[in-house]
Length: 172
Image 1 (cartoon, one colour):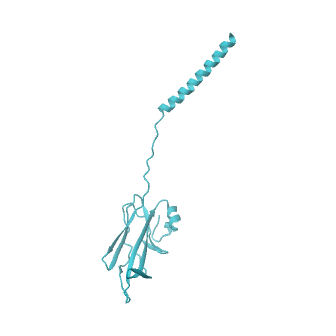
Image 2 (spheres, rainbow, N blue to C red):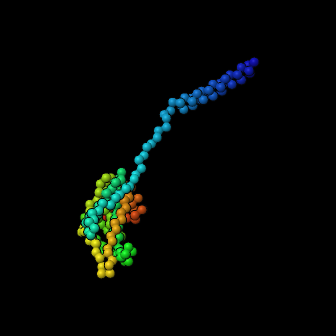
Image 3 (cartoon, rainbow, N blue to C red):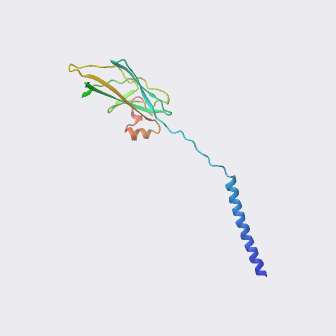
């Protein structure tokens, strides 16, 4: 009989421990805070060329940062002699960039990050005037631009292979 009482007490103790652990787990699951959703706004780089061209002279090239973050911008000026709609020869000319711009390789870089919603100053130190040659070819100048997030700087270095901290006149 004494043995049965010990077995019953042991089983009762195990049952109480099981109920306590199940009850504690259930209470934790019911009362813990609900899932918290983190809302992140992704970085979005969107730049746009704003240029003044009267049909014969390109007098202004400004890059507007329409992004929600600061961005570095660069511009390529591509010129070609065109006749009857076909490119017959590349233009070998160049421009003198205005203050705040520097040329590295085939790109003109604005030397500081452009704040969200802001614009660069004019790239052109002097206007570019269209021209024509005796063979009837006319000069066509196209402006190509790119923007990239300013932070972290290693993104600019890895994607564009340029260190913004070394650009003349400023940097990140």
